[in-house]
Image (cartoon, rainbow, N blue to C red):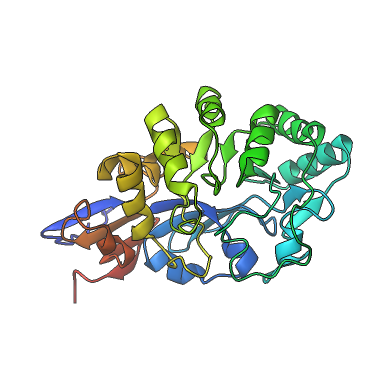
Length: 331
């Protein structure tokens, strides 16, 4: 057989890196433009809250993995903000009233191929929180939260089925509940200031924390919380909460900038949390790397992206699964 001829693209003075993996998105819930997100550097999105869909994408299309509806209680977050169905398609959350109901929901989500189980441990009321800004709640906070028994049932059943649990937390009460239940991940750095004791406990328990600093930028406790967590050696990962109105449809340079300046991580360390380390979180390594056997998901920008994150928001080359989506190097 005649070997296929390789196509050579001269990148010149450019930065080449893996396509981004967004661990906190709401594209399916908001019915966001997947092609736009792909062209702007994100190759994989893990949606956390909304319809449960079969994994899709790759090879020229955005790879989308979904968590399915958020587990909450009647009247709990996100119902006061988004209602039952929100602005997109499918239910944004599922209410439970007992530990057994919670276990049943976890089993259903796991059978449907959920990427992660998400639970809402949110009482509301945080100043500057994006889930309050621009939204008129149907009922004022405090909102009901799952009991410790329900939260533990969610975590225990998820772990039994080989799934991890991500908790929406924003203030100390929800944080304490998440830690007592043994969740694996916080979907946000908490919006309100959290005590050093709780932050230290999170690090001891190995909780993974998605930053979402850009969308949380009006929260009074965000800077102190993330700086303390970084100083304690917390596992911090890039997460921009893509599909929020103030977040770009793709890579968020401001998120990267804030991560560097508030955590002390180097630009390269920050980029790894959005690529190779995120691929490990999804259980899809070597996704997020430029290595043999990895999906050919990569981007390139003209210039040095380590010195100017803004370049990453509009890549000059986008390849998804070996298929060229954007190429500004050849005109």
